[in-house]
Image (tube, rainbow, N blue to C red; front, side, top):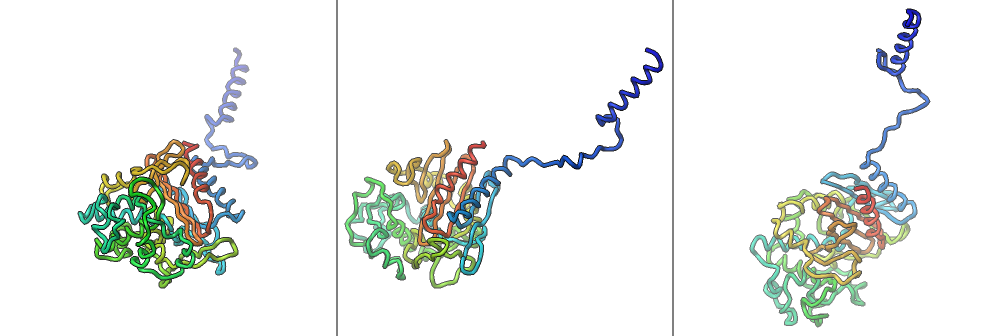
Amino acid sequence: MTQTRLSFFYVTLIITLMVSGCVSQTPVSPSPTVPVIPTLSAEAQLVSQIDKGVTSLVEQDRFSGSVLVARDGKVLLSKGYGMANIELGVPNTPQTKFRLASITKQFTAMAILQLQQQGKLNVQDPICQHIQDCPEAWQPITIQHLLTHTSGIHDYTGDADSLTARKQTFTPAKIIALFYDLPLDFTPGTTFSYSNSGYIVLGQIIEQVSGESYATFLQENIFGPLQMLNTGYDNNRTVIMDRASGYTSSTANADYVDMSYPYAAGGLYSTVEDLFKWDQALYTDKLILKPLRDEMFTPIVPIPKCIQSCYDIGYGYGWIIANRFDQPLVWHNGSIEGFSTEIDRYPEANVTIIILSNRQNINVSSISSTISQLIFAGK
């Protein structure tokens, strides 16, 4: 190769290397006409999908409330949607308090198991052992029958005069008097039939055995230890700050209900953030030891197919035991004037979905199922 050709070869190589950046001393800036767009992580994409989906429901006037989604102990989404108070223009936030309705039952069940751990009762005890002036028909009923809706005690909330009664103020004894003298619907332990009455009786047992009011026992033994500062027993005589107003639509307020009426079957309020503290505590021994927690989440009695949902297996203590998207699931929903609620826990995947709505008849189960499908489709 001649000297001229060699010189041309090396000049060409150097130019090529400089263009490729191999020997350049000065970084080459990206072209201003081609902006660099960061790629969203799979987790960020998931959160964006969930948020857009719930926002779309709000825009369609099909949701108002707060949603929390967590995985592996990390909160992925915690957000309020719609209005907590339409008249005053107050938006929902993760700190907004909602009436829990039947999600209350899992706290009532926990209180019973705490009393068992303290040696003060056993779920196999006949309930008449802990109730004064117990009706003769209740003699065969155990505490476990109450916990699992297999007692046969008539559900007082299904009576014709319930719409009038729920506006009155009750003591636990006065509520029990509503169904005290009624015959049992079936022989205890023979079938599953959802009964709020059983959880009313459980609340009375908690008070009798502990010597404290239902509200005080839960505060001292559950809410206080877990620092659930925005959770408690609702009532209509104390102003509860930051509690959402309940609605039947975007223009109509829900009917009045005195919260002494649902009592230990549905009288609590909370936030999505406090319920996440509750969820995380259920993975630990902070409230009760593992053998009792395992019992709580065991399907003690089968649920007849599709009474609650077609993927349900059975009822534990205050929880429905199910399998959805090939994942074990423990869950419960609730409905009361102006509010619809649900908490779903996938314990093996450590996934939690909490939806609290201040709109009556919102299908929170459908929303939760859609969120679950998004989560497990990407695993």
